[in-house]
View 1 (cartoon, helix red, strand yellow):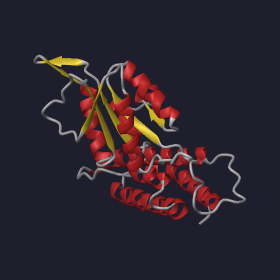
View 2 (cartoon, rainbow, N blue to C red):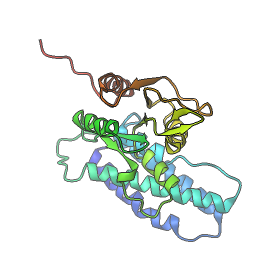
View 3 (cartoon, rainbow, N blue to C red):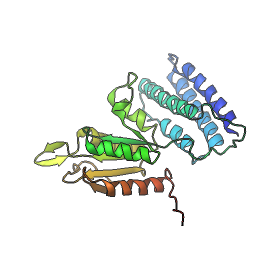
View 4 (spheres, rainbow, N blue to C red):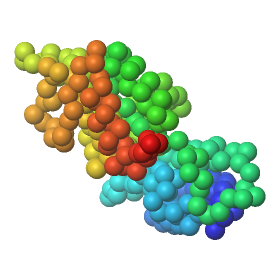
Length: 255
């Protein structure tokens, strides 16, 4: 399927969302309709861009739903899922807005969609500023939740929403809180580690400020220690991991 046709089908799927949100007392029927809509949408995106594409992965991450017994609670979860899916689909449309498709095939042009990296962080810091600047310089879009609109969402919902719009996550664990004589990251960072591990089990980069410890109730993977004044080693680690994630290409210098 060519990209232009795929984008038109995506527009059609977005137009179907209001009907799925319409108040419905037959929760089981509504759940089945949402399930079918998600499957159809994933098929369209996969057919148009490929299963390994950033477009497919973004929509697939957005469409994940928790299954619960309480039918009314399930509808609430479904509505949140539709919100995330709509945002992911709108993001695809925006990235291809104004594109000339006369010579475009079913494989998207390399680099048309800028990878997005969710950044979990504590207080504003020099490290956060440096990290965002570095990612921007290597054509990666740093996604800092507090800089994004809430659109009526609760804090946890906002974090999950923007996690689902990202391609991976960086945990910037600066030493912001002192607990029992030890320096720990802020609690929101600890919470976001759990959310990121659920969405990106193998695509998280952990940066831990020197002298800071993770609490014993979380299980981060291998982390890179850093100093806010000198973050070169951390940046090398980030670049290496982004290449492994398929979000950044290693370019061999000309001889």
